[in-house]
Length: 353
Image (tube, rainbow, N blue to C red; front, side):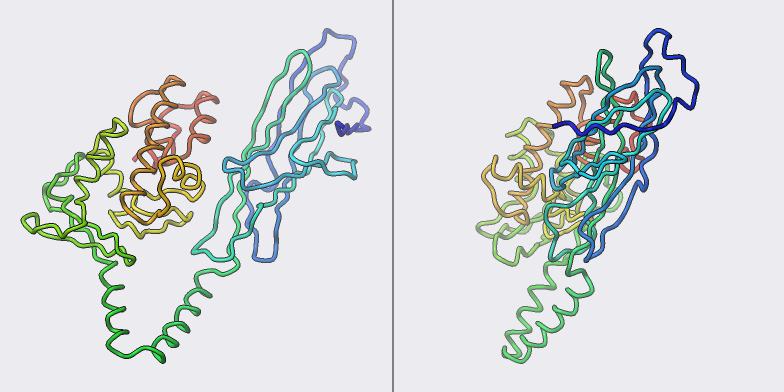
């Protein structure tokens, strides 16, 4: 059932209700716009004001949603004692301002993580009636893992001590050498770097062993059995999704410096720095399971890029640069920008670069 909130304020702006019907409204700033949850706080709360600028009593509906579907919402209108999930309706007299409280709750708290996770949530206010209109505001909620980097480092030290007490010295040294190999730097040829990454710079091979060791080899070296050169991998996957393989290669270098074990600040993983939510959605579609395997990671990224390219073209913004903006910034943010009349100049500078 709708939850109607009726504000007892007597027409403070002196609007003449006998005039011809006029409908308009505005939405004030969220308070607060951004907030961070601690390990012991499981929800955030914002307040959104709705101002009726028309000369007739008007009904409004508020909806809460987040791009990844990882949050639930409870909305409560001013003067009401009951919160409703995800949506609430209220009526506001002409010239009055109504306040709605929105509680945002991540559906699951992370037990372990290297950094904060940001939830981008939108609150949409719809003016109901004969002339429906919408306004949307953005809220950001950051959640921290129960076990952060500090505690993870302490646990790692303790595990290393236990391993040192239980394993022979030479076995421990073998494990250390394997770990060191995973941090090998990718070398870019000096003086030859262009927008189109050269073939010589891509003679990097990966192993499908459990350690995912990276080998940087000379062009003339012979590839080991069971390994594929990155150039060959990019060419094969790009052809499958009608993409430019050099674009895939350049993007992989920009995203992770060709490190398949890289983890970003927002928990983006692997060679193409794919968000966990994107991986969960697209990995089953292409039949892969390991985000740290370079081939699997690039396959998911290419499938997602092909989808974004088609999506951007369908809304009148074709071209690889809009596809890459949607990949880097998110299609939801891009859609909001374009619908509000923004263009290339309003895209964040880091994303444009």
